[in-house]
Length: 207
Length: 379
Image 1 (cartoon, one colour):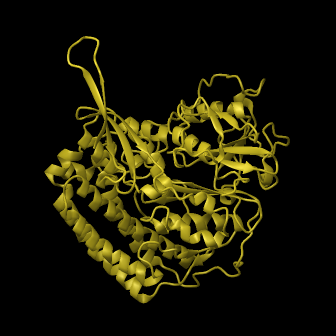
Image 2: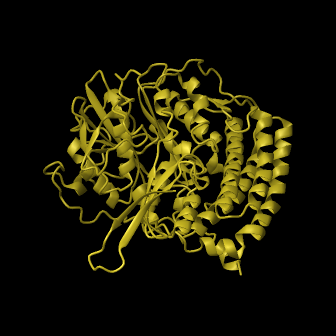
Image 3: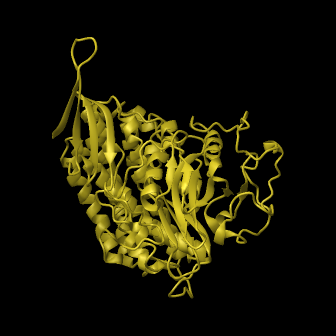
């Protein structure tokens, strides 16, 4: 009676999963996208000089090398290819805080999955960085979206309507950094005690 | 166990719609650690199951910011204590990537052998504990009997039975000895008939099948929306395995399959793990055959590392899914930021949606089929 089960063992070819709508056809031009940019005409240039996004801090200058194919060049977001061997991800984009939901929607349509959300406290620069990691379940592609917000008022829009899995990652980031995610249903402490009013991963936090 | 009762009379005046809150844990045997699930119940049916995390939160990420890279090594064995090898692999991997340390091939092969042994041991703990949840006690004894052999092998080379901390930046703490190689070969030969026995004894058992088949279907789309990975995602038919999709170490040199089952139910997740044990045995066997000679440690690895400024990621396929370290360095001796992306957090986060409307006993079967390690969620 168990023969059928034994034969179910099969490696599905990539693309069998219904998760990935591969074609980005019909991407709506939404507010927040760089004006006047034709997403399909964007050249896949890894070195593109002045970036519209915020300063990437200590990363700048590290990614110099031969031109790499940018698999997300067609999106109206400043995605750049990076050296996977050096960094551990394939593309990254530094965007404005208002654009993180747009980026999530585009990556959602591309079939990406949300890996994690986290923060970095750049105390000396008076900024907080929010980093969104994405992975693609079938294409073996890793994308990073990052944004910078002022440290005295750290707030970015929540992604949980695009990726419900963002809920816990955002709660955790709020716990650790005090970054508020506007539109999040419940930012109560997730890992910290329920009465916690401190944010231990801030660089000026003293235990 | 019932902590609260709320009665709201229905507008029709017939039977009142009555829900109550059932508090599962934080010490319930089915939660395998201190996880609390606040369950709003309508009779035997789950209306809403809200996991409450953080009972064993240790702030591993803050600990990463106040010690050197090498000093953080022992911590990595203690995040998911059942996947100590693979988690240490991610940590040494990210540091080696940033410092551009070349690891000798022999060291990488031994890393693969020990990681795969660790994966089998982890799946055996899950198997025994899961069946314990479902009411079968005996399989646990078989699982722990076989796992004991792995623990003995790993203890022989690392000195530890659970928190190994065996890898170093650039290689391994020490080379393996003949006893380990022979013992591992013997283990592979002995384990295959045991897997068949697991199947005859448990997998083919009609009671188990009736408890699992069709219970708690999780679609590939739900996994994608929540970032679930590992056997949960592969049990929904997606062949996502970091060892194949984003190859690291020497995994591309081995011939192995990524078992997937498209059903998405608890049985599919069960079968993925059972088949993975056989695949791990295949990898170990090939690695033993191909094991090259030479050193197990790169030359001239500085005692105190200073990594170039920037951020680096390294992901591995742990027993429960994708584990990633995201490291930010500002060119000092201690990391600027360590982010640990753990698989159990994402795998559990879909439970609230997946368990809606389910019978309580089925919801517990689903919870067990997610294979949670709570310190991995809480960190």
